[in-house]
Length: 477
View 1 (cartoon, rainbow, N blue to C red):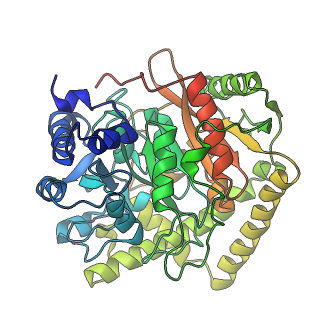
View 2: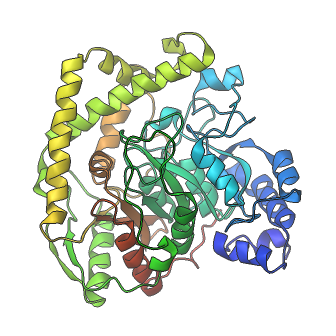
């Protein structure tokens, strides 16, 4: 076998070690990733911009001596600008304009400093608004576990690429579940970090719903990349307290005996696929085997249906802001023809909301945030849930509908019952690939910790990874 096959299923930590020991060069790792993208991605459509020539040039140059020197990486094509490269945010107008970023965002610059080599950019739904990756601009990304299924979203391109072994990990972002959802659908580790843990500068503010990190195949990669990238940027308005030690030191560390609440049913009474319930209950059994106390319990605020409406008000405002930003980049107003129906209708909803209405929604969300945090303050360490209410669904199931433009959003809401609340609360949450259906589809479970306690999540995730390892599971693509 060649190096493309020899390194395909190695995680980023193992690939970086090969470079450190001189067994392979950065150029060899990058060429191997390029070969895999060219050979495998036509079936997936996960990499929508190939940056091969620049990657080759960078791999042969004086790469920074960071923890991932020479390791190939993919950037999600959403807000994460890399200097001199196109960025479209899944939008037809930006794609057709050939818009090119003038500078790196702060996080992208930190990826470079860690030694990563960008080989391309990954597909995303327009503006990251839906939990499936089927933008009109670039077409659908296919799940490598079953090509007729969605890889989730909005980081679906990144997740499909990592799950298929094109790269060991990839950039991802999460404003309502967009790291955890595709991690569940593609059988990966997906950590949504605390609000303010990683800067969103200089273009976005940390006080919103979104955060950025990665999808990976190992807990140690997720921890090590967090070590390389966490911390505030210039002018950040929200900053999480720094960790007491490196996150990588939490991998394999004893978490002690934890008090864990289990929520295996839909908090608002909706349907949950039995496979998702089974995944959460099996995880509970594993956790009890480690000596943790697990019981059926969850924050009662999750049972409040107004949480969805208030989250939706903020989501609509963010969509309107996203459209305005794209208009500024293009130097012209966007029209209905420039934006997918679901997003145009969502933004129009924001346009009918007064400043007082928005302030009222923010105040209500603030109270919900306090009520959520109080559950952890009252002595709970973790909440365990399914990541999704459904197994990976068929492509086209959440599709744009010009006649009912908001229909995809309502359908998506039923699927993602367990993730958005923790964007509202700003708490860290992780999806782990602990279950597969009888027909071979991955199903993730979610663990949620108190604000800024990524350390607890990583310790427990490491316990589960050691007890029920998933690294040997590979998709049939």
